[in-house]
Length: 184
Image (cartoon, one colour):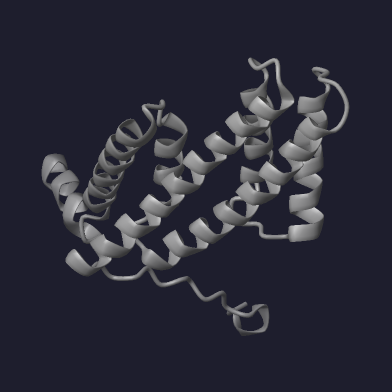
């Protein structure tokens, strides 16, 4: 009987888990092949970004994509700014990450994926660590951010395409009952 219930759960919500698995399978394949063909780079950041921007629910995929792109650009700008000023010091990393959190939280205020800003600032700063030149370090950081943005775009496009090929019901947001109308 328990096996039957587990099997029923599999079909209960339009196979949304299977649909998401297919989204990330297709997206990961696209990202991996394209980045290997174009730049022979390690596409792990792009694949992770593609997964984060993918969703079987198109509205959620669009919200996540928007928040991720905006906050990635904030983190990139902050990371590049900290790389450009002064000489290299290990303290640049925590200062850049903290600054990107403050800017994302209090200036930009796009809460969806707000953690992307410090992650991207960290990617930009860390990407420059192995280079002796500021310019080469900045170029490497921009390259990594480009991969992140590419992964986000692929995740959104696969989500949109799959919504046409395999439509699923949109989740309805629960409408909260006003306190005054709740039974006592």
